Image (cartoon, rainbow, N blue to C red; front, side, top):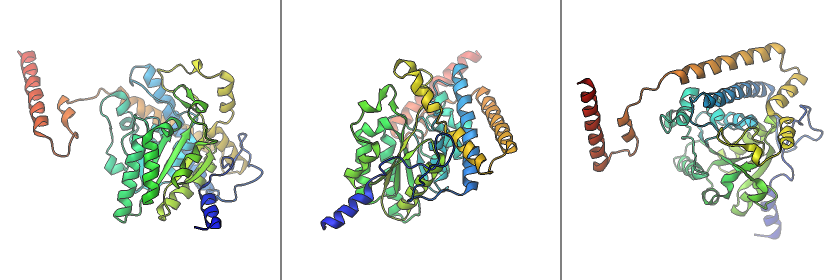
Length: 373
């Protein structure tokens, strides 16, 4: 490879020097529009704004359910709605999504029943929805393990000749895991159609980004593997949707994987069990609240005459109806069968598993008989 070709190859992998942005924190268009990306149609932005309103209300309702004892834990994604909604809207129904435990709003945007989304966090099932039917993998709690799964699924789609893409959602902490780097390397070598979407919310629980990496941005972690990379303002839905749509189509066209880093912020604590005041200052949170992604997009759409008071009222009403459905579903007692413990462990149960299931069934029968006597 000549020096000129090598330089062009490297330049094609490098992310923008600063995060791609279309809309400033105050909702006004930026002075210099990104030359490499196209702003999504206004109707797509209106749809995204409505989804953001619904997502934020769902997130608030889920947080409240933890305080009522209806959920064991809930990792809020308040402040990351542009990332959650943008990721889903950039995909087609036949594409695959590989979420983390913090991506419940993305699942709701994918039109999965909100109560089924919360089944994991209530402790009923590891996954309350059908991954094959929804093309959404189970929410992953271990960091970065689903990145390997997404890469494997993408490679499977490629080998079968299917026109599909896999997107893996991860946090900044996951980029420190070996699985993340193994997945990037494999995906680049085999040109798997996968998009790695890093939601950099500045903290891996209590560990700040500066203690995780010395890289100028997490987007640069893709360069060493030959993965095209980009960084985007994760609180600007217009930019997120534009960048992710381009990344998905790049992968779909057979051009290999893409790594996108979104600069965003987790406004609430890591989970309801976390005290974020122990490791971050109030003024830092206040600065990011001023860059609220929902308010930013609403202001932008209003300035373009694309959003009215009636639209806002309708979205808020729909959001309250969603919250009511979630409350009703979570207030209903779960009907659990202990024998379901053995379902879905293996495609074909092993002899040991069958023996254990029979033993438990006998014990349950004895207990039921004793109670009846």
